[in-house]
Length: 207
Image (cartoon, rainbow, N blue to C red; front, side, top):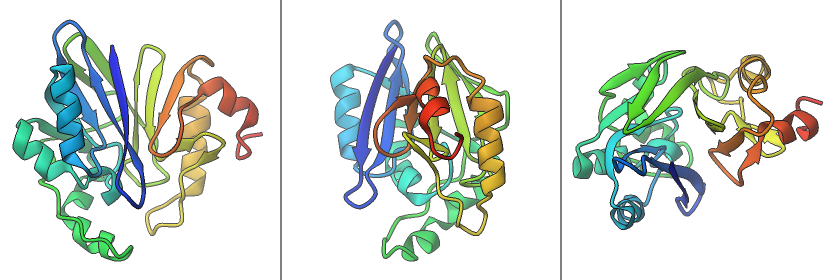
């Protein structure tokens, strides 16, 4: 499996992940928040074809590149059904932060807890982890979990937005992420990677 992490955007440095199948060269792009040209360059260098664009949640710093990436690649856009409406209001939300982000196209596929997203020889299991947003998801495959802004190294995602829910976020991490093997690598929406075992032992929100 190919995993490439790109920190995108001059202000928020949101992590985008390119996940590809080495055998078939099919790939997904998780959270293309900005700098689509950089994403396309990496895809070209790795000779990968994008099947899906997946948003872990609907905040503009993670989905701001949806429109351009979809136009160039023709990939289908996936998000949880509860966050799907956010895609059509990115300009309003981003303006609150002094940013100007184009609205995303609507989702082609709306997923729920337990769904599988398959490309090449890889399948990502959808884990609904709300709290940072109502439709926040994590994506698990074989010792790797992409968690968006649910869990960070030593911290958690903010829940002070209008649809945030601290209790739901903590519950989701404890009951759905911390049951994964300790060796599972955690790929968060910002900052460095970590592991489930490290976060169970050291994250101040769960000690």
